[in-house]
Length: 234
Image (cartoon, rainbow, N blue to C red):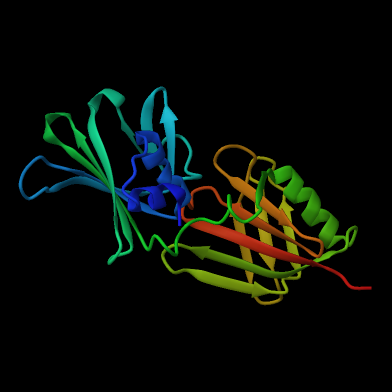
C-alpha cells in the first residue's frame, strides 16, 4: 500500500503535496467538484491519474492526453484545508479539500490495496521511443537474443487483449509524422500511435533472462501495452 495512505491510516500528518501525490501511485482517481450545500451536488466530475505542481498551484490531469485537454487546476490561494481518510471497510482513500466560497473538491481512490501502479516499485525505468524502436528492430531481425512471448493490452475498465507469441512487434515509421507501435500475429493486428514527447510514456524492466516493456499510448490515458521478451536458449 502507498506510504502516504499507510501514514494516514496510522493517524499521522502529511503535507498537502504528499496527499495529492497519492494520485500518481494509483491507476485511477475520481475527482469531483461539489456545491457548498447540504446535498453536495456535483458541479463536475472526471477521472484522473496524474498530479503535478503547476506554477505553485495543483494540477490534476490524465496521462498521455497532451495540450492540457483534460485537467483541473486548483489555485493554491483557493485551498482552505485538505484532509485524507482511508476507509478500511470499502478499501477506499478519500481526499477532501475545502475551498473558498464553500466549494469542496473531492478525490476518491477505490481498491486501494489492489490498484497501485507497479512501475515505480517493481524495477521499471523510463525510456523513450527511440530505444524501444532499436530494441524491437534488433529483435525482429534477430540481431539480439530475444523473442516476444506475449503482448497484452489492458485498461482499468476491464479491457484485456492478449496476443501470444506475436510474430511481428516493431515501430512503424512509414509516416514520419505518425509513428505507430505494431503488434501482430497471423490472425490479429494491433497498431497505436507513439511519439517521443510528453504525450507517450515508455518503460522497461530487465532481468538476466527477460525484458518487459510498458507503453502508455497517446490519447488512451488509462491503457497500457505490455510486451514480454525472453532470451533464446542455445
